[in-house]
Length: 79
Image 1 (cartoon, rainbow, N blue to C red):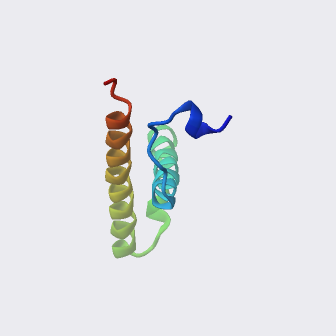
Image 2 (cartoon, rainbow, N blue to C red):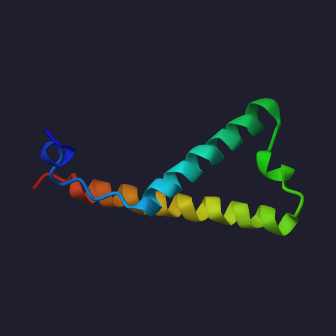
């Protein structure tokens, strides 16, 4: 039995969704490390512009994940 038979209304997951979720998992690890051990992994990047770019990528991947979650909720509505 394939996943599409179990969840027929589940939206397709694109490669961009997968990359966004990987970025979010890595950024969550960064925030946990900062919260418990006071280590911010992004600050090891010496260039401030590149640090800002990394934070923008994290923010954009968060928005992409929110849109995917919204799409999943729309597909799971009971008609």
